[in-house]
Amino acid sequence: MTLLEEGGLNLGPLLPEHWQEMAVGIVLFLLVWWVLAKKVVPVFEKTYQERTEAIQGGIDKAEKAQAEAAAALKEYQEKLAGARAEAAQIREQANKQAEDLAEQIKKQAQDESARIIANAKAAIEAEKTAALRELRGEIGGIATELAGKIVGEVLSDDQALNKQIDRFLDEIEAERAAS
Image 1 (cartoon, rainbow, N blue to C red):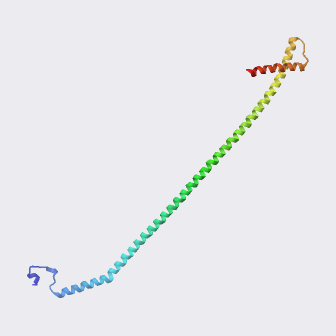
Image 2: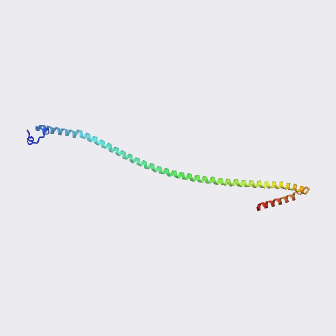
Image 3: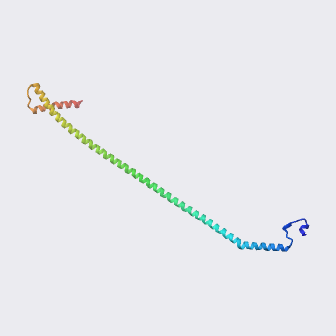
């Protein structure tokens, strides 16, 4: 029995019976520790370092891609704003041209309308003058014939007769103009 067992402390299988077992255990532990420290841990460290670098590289790439995307977005927004401004300017120019064209067409239409009205008035005046001449001639002929029937003679002085007819028609026109 060992000393620890005599004192009432029983460690059981944890306490080796011989010191040689303890020495071999320590040597084996140190040997395993040395193999792990020299062979296994460096592989783990290397793998860990590679993964860390890969992750960091991925993060760097992602940040770079994000920065490029942000720059591309900013450039796109600037181009879009420029395009919108240009479109607004083109729209404004088109509206101005349309207004100018509408004004020009309206002026041409008014000029054409005035010309047509002037031509129509001139044509009406010419027809009126021609109708009055024809009417005077017919009225003169009818009046002469009627006067000849009333008097019972044929009236032959055309010049005097035409003066009387013109005077009569002028009186009628003056009365009509006064009304």
